[in-house]
Each structure stands twice: as structure tokens, then as C-alpha cells.
Length: 291
Image 1: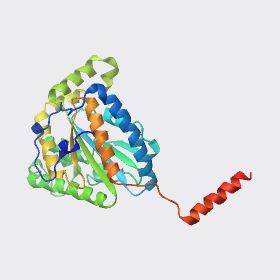
Image 2 (image 1 turned 60 degrees about the horizontal axis):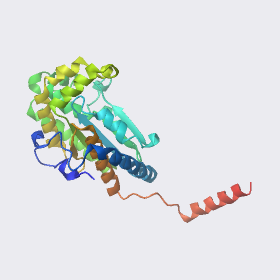
Image 3 (image 1 turned 180 degrees about the horizontal axis):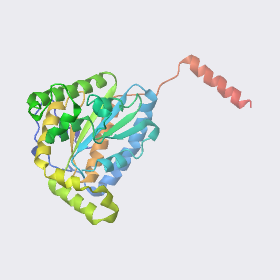
Image 4 (image 1 turned 180 degrees about the vertical axis):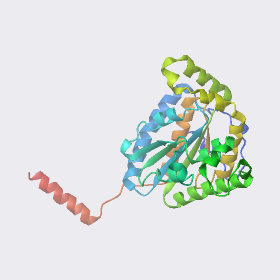
């Protein structure tokens, strides 16, 4: 198993992304990754079955990253063995007019997974302290009382917003939702290579948007926004894991290892029927055998 502690953004500490190598792979080699992931997919299937049957918790997995870091691929590979009946995935884009009529957490709250379900947010409520941090003009569209111009979006505004996120995650955790947050840490050079691949290869052209190049110009600002968001919101109830993403094969086994470790720690069991219900099963069995 991947050394999970090395990926954890310790609660209460100010992190610097420069301390985390996007190319880190630990003791793992690419030739062994496929076997490792296959084993993890099988284990996740087993754990999800128990998780679904126990119906006591839900699991929310948050994925955030710069463009081309591999969020979609991580979802496709890591969750490939999961029963679709027990899993939901939501990709959040720019908020709609209706969503802007509510607080910024509303559209995420109504997409939370039910008990027994695993839910994945591909981008999430964190966009409200990431893209809006780099482009604060977007905040004005939220029509927040007292925020009438960019000068009203000060440090206290962001401190309050981090606190609102922490309160949101603490509330859902206390009500049975396990929260795991993954930041796929990609290097600028590797992003460049992946963008070039999308341009060169016709079957990947659809993935490319010129807007990605425009956002790339704000790379340093985004790195700082991620550092501040992770430092202020990695908590015991909702930890952040910084996943090296230059090697997709490693990021996938790292994410799956964290999920497996978390589900195993719950020590959930398949529900056992009471004596009266078992007697009903035996009665049903005899009826069927007599047909």
C-alpha cells in the first residue's frame, strides 16, 4: 500500500506545494501498477458491497486539480469495479442562474450521496475558493449582501468562506458522511505535454479548450489558491490528500489505496437478520421447495 501519511495535508499546518513532488511514485514502478490497481478494484468492490448493505454511512470523494491532471481518468479507472447502483458522480461547471439564486453550497448539498452510497464530486464547492480567488469578479454574480464591488472581497471574506466550508463538511461528517478530498498535483511541464497531446491527436481534440491556455497564464495564482484552500480546510473530519499526478498510474493507485484504507477503518459488517426474520426465510424456503 502507498505510504498514505506522506500524501496527507496535516490539519492545522500551512502547506507549500513545493514540498510535494508531482512526479513522486514512492517505491512503485509502472510495470507493477496495473496489477496493484486490479487488486484494489477487486477490494473496492468487496468493500462497497458491505458499505451499501450496512447503510449507515455515505462517502463523499472530492477531486480538484488543474486542467489535464487526470480527474476523469482517475474516476474511470479507480471506480471501474464499483456497482453503479451504489455510486453517483457529479461534475460541477459554472453555476447556473438558478444556482446563483442560492448560497454557493446549495447545489453541492443537494448532490450529496445517500447512506450506503459513494458520491464523487469532479470539481466541487472548492471552486468557490479557487477559480473565484483567481477571478474575484465572479463573486459579484452571487449577489451577496455587502459585497458590491471587488474591494469588498478582502481577506476576511476568504477567511469566512473557508470557515463556511469547514462547517459544511463538519456537519455532514457528524451525520454520517465520510469526506475524502484529493488534489491531483500536476507539474506545469506535464500539463503542457498533455495539452500538446490533446492538440496533436485528433481523437483527443474534443478535450481541448483554448480557455485552458488562458487559465494556464494564471498558474502561480492557482497554485497559491490551492495552497491556501488546502491549508485552511484540511481537517480531521475532512482531510486533503495531495496526490502526485505527473504519472497517472501512480495517482490512481494512491487514490484507491486511500479509499480502501478509509472504508476498512469503518469495520462495517453485513447486517444479520434477527431470529424472527430468519424464521421467515426458512418458511419462504420451504414454500419454494414445495412448488
